[in-house]
Image 1 (tube, rainbow, N blue to C red):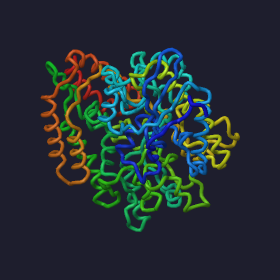
Image 2: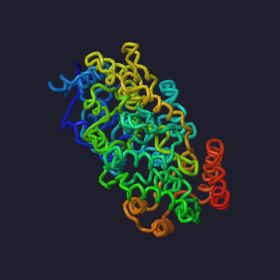
Image 3: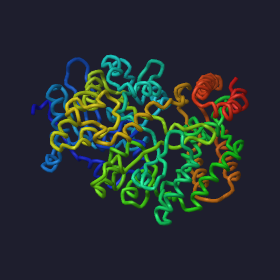
Image 4: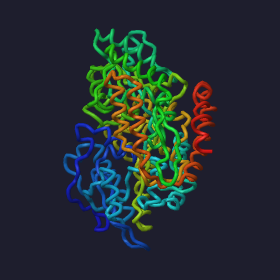
Length: 572
């Protein structure tokens, strides 16, 4: 290996997959960038590029190229995937002899650490953490991400994106013709319930279909408890009730708690620099009582069990062990591990005579009783941003390397060459739906397909989610706001009381509304009232068009009254 292509290392982080589990916060943060983070650990970093034809030195963590050629151990060489990754990376280095990769252990595991690193000019060259359009726009304004519009176009990134991912990508990343990020490498099939298909079929329980309801969940939960000899058969985190109420969009939307709801908040453009959002959940008290009443009835009947210590990653292990027959989880957990003590495919070890398709089914979360649904059952994809301090050669090198490993021949080679060793189709298709154009790996036999690896039923359900219409996201319509609203702890406490107590629902709603609005009244915003109103008019007009086209029952029964009475008078 030449001096120019050698890889220098100091302290090497252990891979995330070697950890017993990720927390939900860690998972969401890493997935905001790219699913490859989950499989790798640390981040790629850079100490800057150079102008002209000079050499480029890029600092590298264990993501996304673990293990590096210079750090591969004898044990790594016995692990087909690790050896292949090192070999594929070396191929790129051999063709880019002006690039040196130097290992670093820089910590960007929190938003605060990442921001400090960027501002201190010690940042990674590639990172996540700015996970939606509003955050990307604000990050660009604040100098926290590079404007990659020119390199995005010169490398023709649009041509590298799968057809089923392209519309979604532009809906979250095209900031008026500008790009501050490249696409993450995995399309998510939303969130929902995984269930034991073999148990459902053996007991004549209808499998969930698109548009099923939370009333259906209650019926299924009772039947599964009977089948399970009186033992609760559905388990999940306490915030499962949040998915239920967000199916009706009853919770707050916009920047209040991440946009999971909608009609529980209203625009409230104040004077001067006041925060421009307000909670208005008490208006919908009867609907909240109905939905939370349904949730509490399942808890009180002991047909569903929730625990504050659970999250989607931990319940996978309980599903595989047989403790639960139905659990909530993110769709991509099906083929990717590292989120808990087990992965879904481990279940097959207990039933070697059955295929995964026979054993496991997946259904996105139910629709709401009012005809709505939440963004949790839409497809999703991450964004990868780049250090604004990189000079042109550094930015060109890191984007080229990223595209090679996840959108080009490197992606194909890692999976095809691993398959050649293991002969396991799962090694050729660790992603059900990559955001690149290699849904079918061209370098494995024709009969080695993603359906052969993971089951035709699951793959089809996953791809059907990719066709789900995308609810307009507020971040695409408002100017960037560098300020943040009230602490999200207020909302977390609200959700906890709803899900883990039998306290009167009207009292819980009022406390949340009063506490949030009191905090919001004294908080600033970078947006003027006029700028906020202009963005709000565009945003709510887009929502009006969306719900009119996609759900007549929600549009007529709920949306029109909310839009015309609660929204338009405030932003006209």
